[in-house]
Length: 297
Image 1 (cartoon, helix red, strand yellow):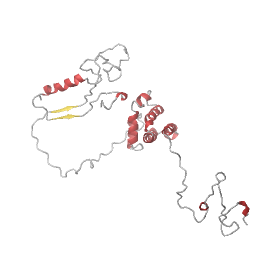
Image 2 (cartoon, rainbow, N blue to C red):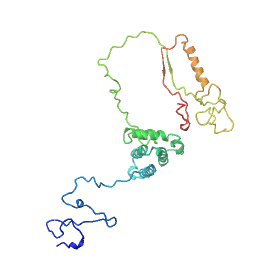
Image 3 (tube, rainbow, N blue to C red):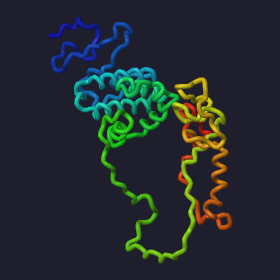
Image 4 (cartoon, rainbow, N blue to C red):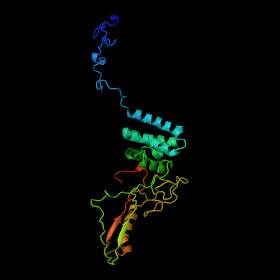
C-alpha cells in the first residue's frame, strides 16, 4: 500500500490500486499549486501551446556582430576548409549576409574584419571601412545568394580569387518582352543607301572639383585636386594643372564644354545636326569612395 503520509494532499485516492497516485504538488518557493492536468494520464497534450520550449532572447546588434567575428575566425581556422578556399570564402559570406540583414550598421566593421582575417589588404580600414567599400559590400551581401552563383562570383572577383570564376549563366529573355519573338521573323527592310551621322558620347568624367594649378602629376588619382600630391615632391608642384585638363586628371568644365562646342565643326553637322545621339554614361569623376556625394552623381 502506498504510504499516504508522503504528501499532504492528493488528486485521487492514494490507497487505490487501479490508478497511479496523483499527489497535489506545489512550488516550494512560490507555493504555486501545479494543475492536475500536468500529470493526469488522461489529458496528455498532443501539442503543448501553453508551455512551449524556451527560445533564446533576441540578440543585440553588437552581440550579433561579435558572434559573427568569432564564426569567421572559426571558419578560417577550421581544418575542414584547409584544402578548399572557395568553400571557406562562401561560408564566410554566409555569415556576412546574415549580419548585413540583421545588423547592417556593423556590415562595414565585419568587412574590415574579413579583410584582416584573410589578409586581403594592408589597409583594410581604408579599403573596406564605412567611408570606402564597406557600405557597398553590405548592400551586395544583403541581396546576394551567398551559397550559390553570387557567392562564388564574389569570392572570385573581390575576395582574393578564392573561388574559380563561375560558368556564365544561361540568359533567358522570355520575360523581358510583352510578346514572344515573331516566328517566322519579318523580312529585313531594304537598305536605303543613305548614310547617317550618329554621335556617340561616353566617359566624360566631369570633375567639378578640378583645381587649376594643383598637381597634375600626382601619385594617386584623380590628379588636379588640391588634396592629391606627388609623393616624391609633396610640397612642390611638379606639373601645375592647366585650364583645359591633363592626362592623369578627370575632365575640367572648360575642356568638357570646349569639346562639345567643337563637335559640330569637326563632324560637319553645324547645319544638319546628327540623326541621333547615343550617350553611354560615366559622367561623374573618379572620386574616392569617401569623397562621393549623391548630389555630385
